[in-house]
View 1 (tube, rainbow, N blue to C red):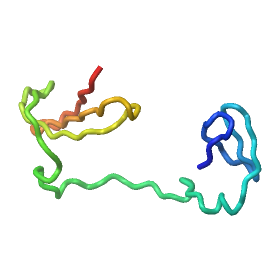
View 2: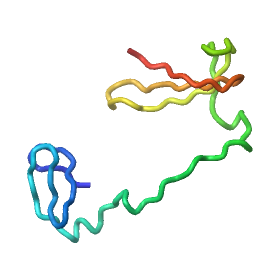
View 3: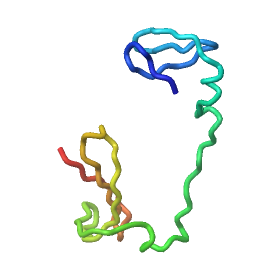
View 4: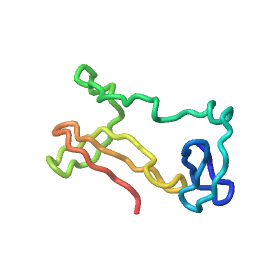
Length: 107
């Protein structure tokens, strides 16, 4: 991955040139530098994870919260950073009874 020296945006490689999609700045590619970069083109996608043999206690922590679908009062949760780094994390819930999924975030 290469970033533009002019505006800081991510650049894309076309043939032997790096081109900024935002400001149009172009720079010749250094093949030695490019060879050490990791590309997503050569990476394989990972498939779905089979969770059928995993005990519920191993899936994650639980908390007391009311499910909006079945009114059960226990859900598993996980925290994820889905917005900017300077904003709070979002908590995702999964009901332990009906497997309904929902999220809670600060606004």
